[in-house]
Structure formats: C-alpha cells, structure tokens
Image 1 (cartoon, rainbow, N blue to C red):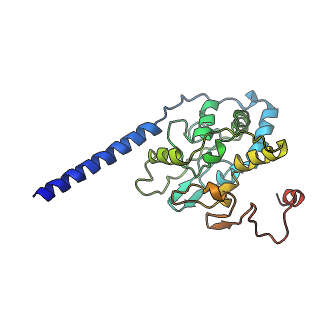
Image 2: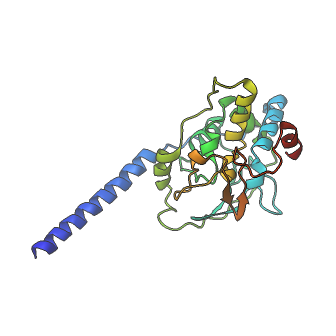
Image 3: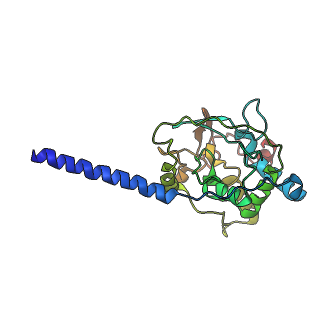
Length: 259
C-alpha cells in the first residue's frame, strides 16, 4: 500500500507540473488582439512605396505559398505538408472578412516580427517568421502598402490538419522561446555593404535557409549547418553554401542569370 500511495503522489505531482507548465507556457505566449481598422483605400498609399513593396514581395516569394493552384493571387489555401501535419496558407489580400483588410500596419508588423496574428494567435512557423523577424520596419511598411493595394478576394483557408497537442497554438510559445532569435537584422561590420545587403535578403525575406538548411526534430533549422541542404514538401534542396556539390563554382553572374 505504501508503494501504491507513493506512486499516486508521484503521478499527482507530475500532473500538477504538466498542468502548471502548460499554463505558464500559455501565459508566456499570450498576446492581446490589435483592434481592427476600416480597410484603407488603395489610393491612400504612396505609389513609390507600393512599388518598393512589390519588389520585396517578389524577393520573399509571398505569392508562392499564399496562392493555391488555380486560385487567386495571395488568397491563400495552399496546403503545406510538414512532418507534423498539413498547414494551409492564409489569405493575405485586403478582404475585410477573410483576409487582412482590417489589419493595421502595427498588426502586420507584429505578424512579421513576432509570428502573432491580429487576433493575438501564435502563427505556425510554416510562415517563416523566424526569417521575417530580420526585416526592417521600413521594408515591412512597404510590404504592407503593396498587399493592401491588391485585389480583395473572399476566400477562407481550410482548417489545418494537425494532431494534438500541435493543434493547440500555445505550444508555439515554447518553440519561439527555444528557436526565435531577436531582430531586425544588424549589419556585420566585418563585411562590406554588398555582403550585408545579400545577407539581409538571403536570411530575411528570401528565407533561403527555410529550404536549404536541415532541420531538427522540432522543425527548427540547424543554424550550425546553414545552407548545407535540406528537405521541404517532398523536395530536396541542395547545399548552397561552401558545401555546394556544383562541379563548376558559381559566380555572381551565373547566380544572377539563374535567379
């Protein structure tokens, strides 16, 4: 009876610690909702800023993930298979009900910088905010201007298909605590402006490592093996760093032509 009682005590303490840990994680990851706005008129944005945002959105390949096959541009709904389940991309057109039409610039900045949506929900890192955290406020402002001047499309993304507890968004707070590094990008004084510009684009908006870097058991990039090759959505992304298997070394000109 003594052993049985001791076992129950240990089990009870373990359950209390688990519940307490979950509650603490939920409290740590909680973010307030940001008030909705009336969708701003497209004409209210500076055309030069919109053009800058268009170029940045191209660098970030926003349309690739946020456009389903046969669907409208940026209207979301693309299924993204991961080792943990399927996540569907969201609608980032300025539709007020199913898109980001009621998002303020502050809400957009928070999503890019913290991986939290306007309602205060943690976003899954299939949206690569671990890279977008490096983007400057000024570039985010331009991206916001571009997206808010797109054609609104009423399209609600299908529900994600994730097992418990991964379908509980508070667990993402733990992932962020472990793997999300602070931003924005800080230039490395050991390198020139061109190198730093390349690093800012490759590490930030272009999120090259999202495919070209291997991942650990938690789905986070192995930063010690950056650009050493990885797997994403059934494809193998070859190494693009110093370990590139290319028989002929890449030059700036050949990379330019390829891209």
